[in-house]
Length: 448
Image 1 (tube, rainbow, N blue to C red):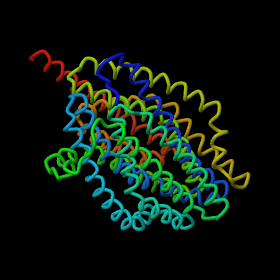
Image 2 (image 1 turned 30 degrees about the vertical axis):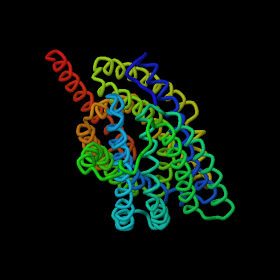
Image 3 (image 1 turned 30 degrees about the horizontal axis):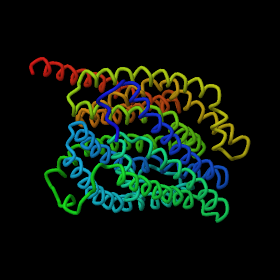
Image 4 (image 1 turned 90 degrees about the horizontal axis):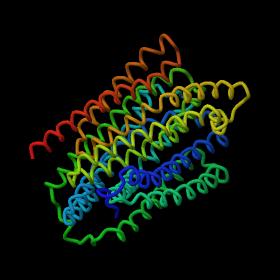
């Protein structure tokens, strides 16, 4: 365990974020490998099939991640307040909650996949591939939620290295299984989906094994006795984050329906960029987790000024990094995108143009995204999960409005700009709410 209430704030955040950065990078890389192998060895139609399933996949994952992130906030608070008994009970009730949520998500997902894809006007030549991919991914909801539960709990107690080691193992297993399933056994999209789930299972088991060794106590049978009051508190923390991710995903799903109207070549280019975009987002996600843990522990310890200073310093650093990433994209973006595309020369040029134009627009606006993650994570660490949820609604409104209106006037660039406008609207709201919360905390300190 790592206590983040003492020592140099920025140094602690960086040390905590770096393993997360490498871990998230590996996770994005093995997701990219799925897409590359499918795009190169199965074809553009298969690539478009995975692209058509992207936002629905993200909705499932975002829902599961949101709950586990909320649960881990309570773990961090208990650590900051030196409440060992409370931490033990929080972890066991998190496990029970995750089991129920995972089962429900799996069942509901299987029911809505087909009607949802038809509602999104998924092209006939890609819809069966999208259905197959989503059926397999959603079947593994229990694996996904427990991996995220174990890794979130590890991060909450200050261990960001074990999730990195888990991702190294998962990435290696995923790449090997991808090559075997797709290239040797010719399982296509199904092989890529199965490889992802199996690698996540190994990552979950690795994190669980490490967590049992790292906790300063053993989880007893008595600690698993139902505590409905605590479960309600955990669900209260997790639901806004899960709902926030769902709202963002709904906006993406609506956006996907507009994207589908531009044909399978545009879908393929859009998919290639979205997979690469995950790498651009790695720093913001990693600093976000670090800020949440840092803020949550210091909030529990009532070290509010230290909390404020750490958020400010992390903000400056993450924006500087986003500018470096922009330069890398400008220099090497097209080369990376070409790894996803295998088609006739004419089709390749069309897909590459769509993909790079979209990538460039997002890379230019990365500082906005990084600021958004910083303030959203800080608010979550302060046990304010409601405002981050509202920020998801702002993203939804901005993304959908722009996607439905702008393409009529500026074509596909309206899709690109819709994503950036969603970031901008949410970032402004989160910044204002963070300032308001900090002002309330400062006033509270003066009166105490």
